[in-house]
Length: 409
Image (tube, rainbow, N blue to C red):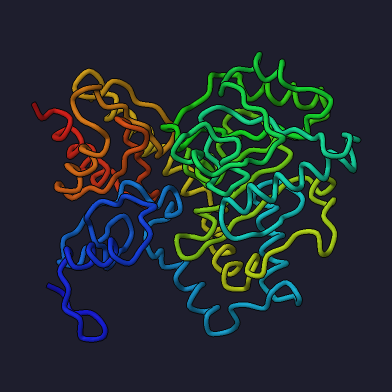
């Protein structure tokens, strides 16, 4: 039992009951009530510690409460937190310059959530298609991939094929064409004169950390350039050192016209997203045509600049590469022993449990009982994304727990 503010003494069950009674049931969390966190560890209201193998779906790439990020937030909290874009502030320009330099792009459009970044990229691509490419008004198309996940706004679920995300939310936004992920021939057949952009995840996260075939993105880039069509890479989950390189697309030797960034960009402290890319593409936006009250606010920019400083050293890219190799080697040893297959890159893995033995939810629950927090995606698949600050010993602790779970009769 733990005493909290307002003289309320609550058990874990009490917190879960409050959640169930007073919040909308749009999530199905494990019954773990977290009260504190640091690095790769979280602590529940009864003082039990857990290894975090989810990292807020990559929002916590640098672990919980990284000292450099907390210091940046605290310092900025004492100065100014919000101005709106009606005025300049002293963090905005430096943040945009530093993020553009880090990513090798030209300009930055800061927003808040990942879904906002994707929506912004869609708007920019359509406007570019009409004003620059010359697509007839109202005819622009954007090609997306099957099993995609880019967010849950009405427009984004319009091109989802996930029934849970899509059913009962129509009528849907038109203008999207869906093709199989990893199939360059299908993409080639879908591109036409009205194609404004191709929007893809370099590695599909929600689908189970699905890595495309070798050469796929090189072919996509060739097709889009030939058709004068934009390539938009959604790096919200895969980017910012998660897969061993700054951007997952870097490993393919391919550059996109626009990238959407989010999650880890806010350091696990607050929402911060951005569209980064070519100046001539993002330059189609003019004052009053797109915006956000909180997008690019001083507090977010200050934390984002601290994130950029961490990434600029290359340390986290190297950690993801080296620890990722260890992660995938250890997970590979489980194939045939309760695990059917493992996919991924860097410190990111999709683990398909042997069908019929247990669901991903059952495995997640069993892992939490062993002090490891993970979460299922789509039936019998676990998604693992430990924070990049994790040690080899801690990584082994989590994998050993998974081995115990999948080896159970």
